[in-house]
Image 1 (cartoon, helix red, strand yellow):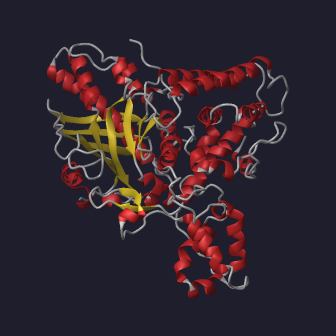
Image 2 (cartoon, helix red, strand yellow):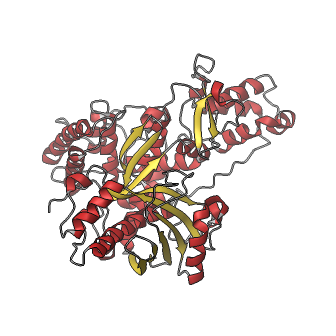
Image 3 (tube, one colour):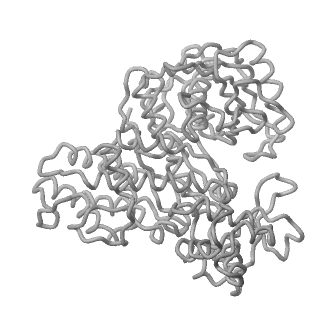
Length: 581
């Protein structure tokens, strides 16, 4: 399939097409509810997998250029990532852990590691200045060419256990590691102009990190590299005959991650990215469904192997999930899906029938019979069958989020757009009890987004996008005027509607730009949107919720080591099994 074929997939299907029909993209009414967005699983288009695939394909090399860290973890380190096109330097400033000022949020004033990803090579002045400026956070300024400022803290129990075990000449206990699956946890990846970092829009088309969030994901991977080097170093400081962390364990461990309400506002503020990512994922799924596979097909064999990995990964998952479906249940449904794929592999038939598009027919048969998370996991695995298509689609993810107003459009046309593309907003009861219960604001103490009862928050600036009310309010206003009135004339009289008019006009034709929900209402569950970003877009595993607001998970669990990448690693590194040493 070439890229031109993908463009023809755009027509959106009904939720359940007949198996005989051409595979189609699913509708926004199916995909854009928060509950459905929250169960989307990782795919070949998740940014961590995209970046790792690129690094493996291009054989990136990672060299530790400097290591000036003492036995109390104080000092600096410098890593160089050679992408072939240009080098990047990762400057690390390491600190002895202390509890005072320690927090996993922006209000923290003490971290175990602070780092900067800079277009390299850096100078001694860059290293010195970065060390002075990063601790200042919002009062600090990055050096030229800096892409990301990063911060992380140790997982104290697992980190200390690993150092102690290595110092004793043995490997750490896998069950202990598997309780969290990381040595250090990301507490901040800030770029795109923040602190004076280079803005995303300024990156050249040929820049190796030109795709959205590539720079952030490279930083996350480098946190993992540093965490392994640090435990090896501290163990060696404790005992000259210490063991080194085994590569099997290094691959098994990822980087911890915590996310909160800010990602809901991220979705509000990046509608084009959300649309293009969901559209790309759907196009990749359709591309896989179109594959003409038959009995004993090698691609079905690979799909079976990927399902086996996912099943074992879920069965071995030791995390407790309060609100989300237990991994054991997902594993059981994946095993059932595997049985159907095995039958297709053995016979070339789906439920005894020969189909024009066997994988599409199989998906139609499975949809609604297994848990949505298991089904979305299967769809994510399907995208691994079309890696070249995924890479081409990923190049279209870098979008301009600016809005533009078309002053010549008639308000009659504008009203038609509202009813055609925002029918979900008119279906919401915006006047019912609890429909306006919450407001979104910036905490004065934590400097982070918060959602609180409107009655308690007082007079605050609402950071949340009240999209359904904006849409309904605009429709009510323009319905009172002649349809031939121009948008220019309308906005001259009512300039307060300029934002929603320009948003509607700019996003017209993009089906997947906004969640179909009222984020001010008490029925809205914030962690569903956060989970969509974490799992679907970022590719984070084992996400657990806290108070239906915050999520904790693991990035890059199973990812190849730096040596693996340089040598040409397994592109299907995800869903690792617990190592047996």
